[in-house]
Length: 211
Image (cartoon, rainbow, N blue to C red; front, side):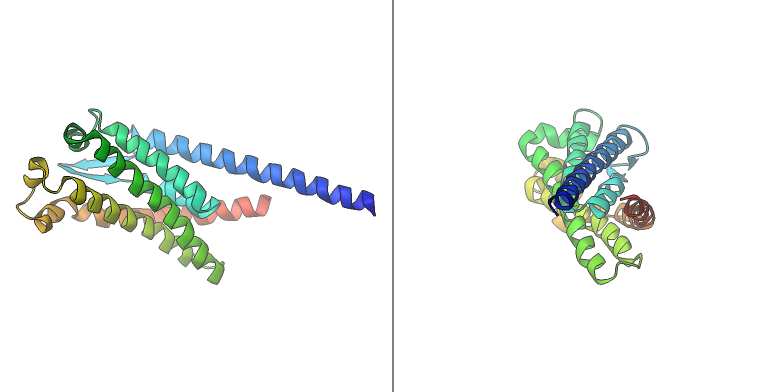
C-alpha cells in the first residue's frame, strides 16, 4: 500500500517536473522567435508612419498553448523589443522617446503584457465551452490583434495626444487615429487570426498527445 502510494507520488513529481520543463522550453523558444522577428523584416512591415506588426502571433500562440501567465511574459518580451526599436530603429518610436522616455516605455510595455494575458484568459473561457472547434483559437488570436491596437493607440493618444509631433498627423484626435489606424489594423487582425489559430491548434494538439 505504502509502496504504491510512493510510486504514485514519484510519478506525479516526475510529471510535474516534465510539465515545468516543457513550459520553460516553449516560452524560451517563443521568446527567441519574438526577438528574431523584431529585428528582421519578419516582425514589422513599415508603411510611412504606420507599422504593421506580426509579433502578436507568437504571443497569442504562447498564451493559447500555455495560458495567461505565459501570454503576459511573452507580451513583455514583445514590449521590450518594441521599446528597443525606439532607439533609432523606428523613426516614430524614436520621436516619442525623445519627447518622454518613461511614457514611451509604459506605452510599449503595458499594452502588450495586458494583451498576452487577455488572450490566454479569453482562450481559456472559450476552450472550456468548445474544446474541439477551431473557433476558440481563432477568436483568441483575433482578440490579440484587436486588444493590442486598442490599448497601444489608446495609450499613445493619452500620453502624446497633445504633443506637436502627434498633432502633425491631424488637428483632432479622430484625425490622428484615422492616420494611425488604417489598413494596418485589418491586416494584423486577418494575419493573426489565420496564422495564429492554425499554428496554435496544431501545436496544442501535438503537445497534448505527447504529455
